[in-house]
Amino acid sequence: MNRGLEIHAVSRTFYTENGTVVPALDRVSFDVPAGQITALLGPSGCGKSSLLNIIAGFDAPDAGEVRFAGVPMGRADSHCGMVFQTPALFAWLTVAQNVEFGLKRKKLPRTEREKAVSGMLRLVGLDGFALTYPDELSGGMQQRAALARALVLRPEILLMDEPFAALDAQMREKMQNLLLELQRTLGQTILFVTHDIEEALRISSQVVVLSSRPGRVADTIPLPPAMDDAARTACRARIRAALAES
Image (cartoon, rainbow, N blue to C red):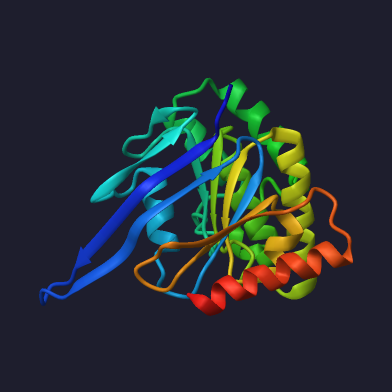
């Protein structure tokens, strides 16, 4: 059985050029259930992005381990796709070329790449913008393109670092809806960093709250699949309490 993503006792300390010790994460442990969205909340500087970089294989922990489906994950792990707060698209490439970029690096045949790109652009609602350049798109459309670029590689794990934070409220809700639709269609295991409690309640099946630096797990809160107002209020209060205690 696919056990999803397991973060076990992960610690990480950084050292500045002047010798200052900056402890970022301290024995962080929690599971991200397979095929579900887990939201990760915590105060600024608590190590959320550092943890994503460790999971993705861009960095290594000082102690602890990350496993997926029971298997240890390594550097630049091929299981992972990542979406950042800013779309980070290549300005000199069209939308289709941006989405195709990772497929070309994998040396997939051209016809296979074109089919995959076309299908993914259709899924994210950008099928009419394949030949458009990033600076001709709105912020929401750019983030759709960035999401398509990550998903076209069909990663089993999708790491998302506040991907909708820069969008206005209306576009943010549209992107949340899109993410939920894509997750139901494609079935990725998603770890979603956010500062927004309401966003976490809306999109996830579990919320993990980290304490202030060094980040420790303050609480892990499972969310009911269909929350009524009373359940939502109770979960919101528990998240706020965990954040206040951190």
